[in-house]
Length: 476
Ligand code: SF4
Image (cartoon, rainbow, N blue to C red; front, top):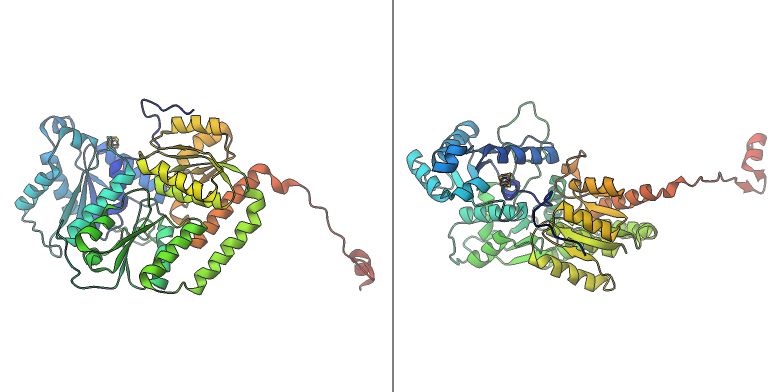
């Protein structure tokens, strides 16, 4: 039985404010400011920059010992002023770190004071909008930080907090609100699918350009791209919202449903055959559109590839770890492939995680009895891997130490991926992304088992006129 640590040794999650940056950075002309110590912002900037290979600016209110004792009011105001002067943003996301939460700064009140002093109003079009979000890392993880930041932004821009309002100007659009952990390549793929089916949609947050920008002859202070602010304001007028991810709560989607009567639907992240089928089926149900032929062909190719590689993957024991929704979708895919996920783990504390995983195992391969863990660190994961003896690891690059120590190959999926380039271009969603993932998993297993090292005998063609060599000699 895997032991749980009483202290965390190498967390299998990232800080809560980092999740907020993942959300804020997908919104047009938005700058992030962490209210807390300088080190938090430095660590998270580096973490994101190493993964996305893009410059990631995150300001800090730089609390020192003095701020910790007397409060961070003046630091936060100074930080906000500097951000406005240097970056000229339209939105500033203010996320708290552990220190600011521990000393108990009333961030909303400080922001109100600051706005009054600087003459900043609440006009969503004319004024700079400051969105506070409470993200102490000792509470939860980057998963919840992302969810809370999106919720705060939608509440701010959709307005009418808490009031149930009828649709005013129906726009016929579909809101797409994914969980954290998609790559810019994933977002581009999903936007392409939506353009071919929904036509008009609002994708929040859109990191396709902000975290994967083309090289320019100048470096913009804030990366262009992100969900336009007028679209976020328009979300309450949409015909429906579709959430990607069914384990973590989608607070923004819930808010739009409860307060603005926008029907909310949620499907797993479309990784794997059945999950991608569910995504397309939901689009068809909501929009009444046909599935374009292009995607029907992609589905056929994926199925063909699954049949081709079945002999290599059937029964292979795997350990999968990472964020809850990503792990759920990866597990479903492995079950579809006939693999044996012996260890399924997430660093997030989640009551629903185990139940959802058990449900899909019951539906697809009820005979399997994997170890399912939530809220683990890499030390516990190491113990669990030792006990379960998987033949392959699937998860983020922080698992490489286990991979090296136990000599088990690792397929890098999710966030962070620091020790390889191209994380921002890894496609895992949709039929095409699943196919790419399938090739990566299969080739990793083939490389590990050295399937291709058996020498291939040269074939000699013989026809009625003799062997190929004899024919060539005769010039036949
Ligand atoms: S755990 Fe808290 S103090 Fe440490 S980097 Fe994260 S937010 Fe900052």
